Length: 411
Image (cartoon, rainbow, N blue to C red; front, top):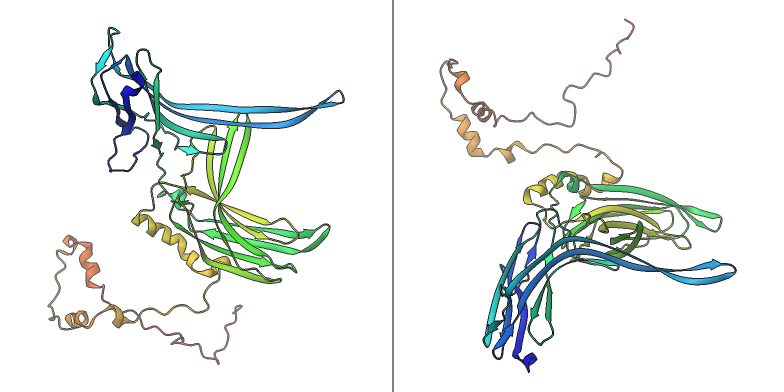
């Protein structure tokens, strides 16, 4: 039978790495080949390729409507679609409509197309929608059903976290009165801070927080990374929230305060933030909360952006400036140290060789200033870089005498 002659039919994408599926972004060229393998001679009408990229959302909502004393149940469907790529190409087709005879064995048909230059939406599979990119190939043969094969490919829109907006620290504070019915049990407050807004999967987020429990019951602090999926269709919004990573702290006793000095929460392998689509959005927040018995929990959200380009080495120095206060638990109260730190010892900076080299320098005669303006500024900096610092002493070397008569401000 003719159906038995087709042995293999599949699509292979060209990849720079062996056994690793390729990942594309806007403007990239997608290339590959369609492989056909027959057991015997076969006639083919055409071999056509169709490439598509689109976003699709769909969900239903049920309700009950009352009319004239009777009620009925209805179901409302919401759906919308956004297209980014739609390309068709004939890989094998005769110009005059004749059949093409393919001999038994393996046949390869290469293909290549370029993704649009404008910003694309990252591939995503959600609860009520998805962002998909695929190629579909159809094999037309006489007296046979059309054979179809579809293979998806991944598109990721790059997000660089090495920008001032994503390197800025995020902080917030929130409080709530614990109530059971009409009785107040006291106030609970939370203050939290993270080093920056942008992170990449696999990184660790150090959480700095302070929890103050003014109630008469113990409360439990928690933190989690929450993914927020938003689907939009016909002016209606559907949202799904899910925790992707979490940590739990020790209970805070009544009338006590607890601090987190960089509690670590690791980001699992998750997709990047998606904000480019009109009908699908994927956002992340760091949710710092306090569970209060008998009352709804107190929650504080700090925005996060999951990027694809990790922090550069030079970017880490920029973020370290903002993280100086993160490493110090006193950032919560902006405390100033009681006593200033002493300057380093002169011998720890200047070695004996440098000091000897300067001391044994031969005396010079009268200095000539005729070419002083021609000398580089660096020369003057080098001459005075080894000048010793002033002697440091905590006690004032010139104290004011106690018997000194105060000056009269009217004289």
